[in-house]
Amino acid sequence: MCESCAFYIYDEEFEEYYCDVNMDEDDYGHLMQNSFKGCPYYQDGDEYKVVRHQM
Image 1: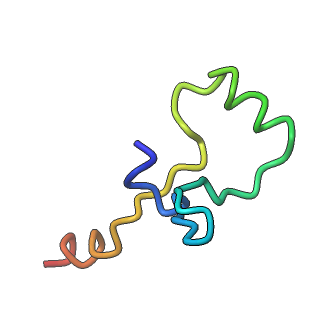
Image 2 (image 1 turned 30 degrees about the vertical axis):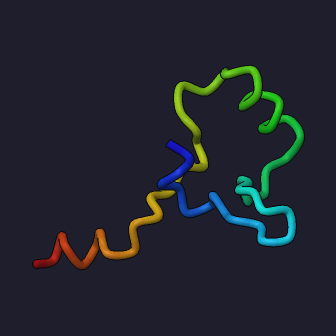
């Protein structure tokens, strides 16, 4: 799921991907404990989704 998220960013310096969401410590703890059914921060990274919908 992360691979298509707008917050999944590639860091060229470390040559790896990471999640670039600004979340607080409590939210991070809930996310690591799988308290959420899905990631509440997920945003579709498909820039053309709106355009295809309008066609």
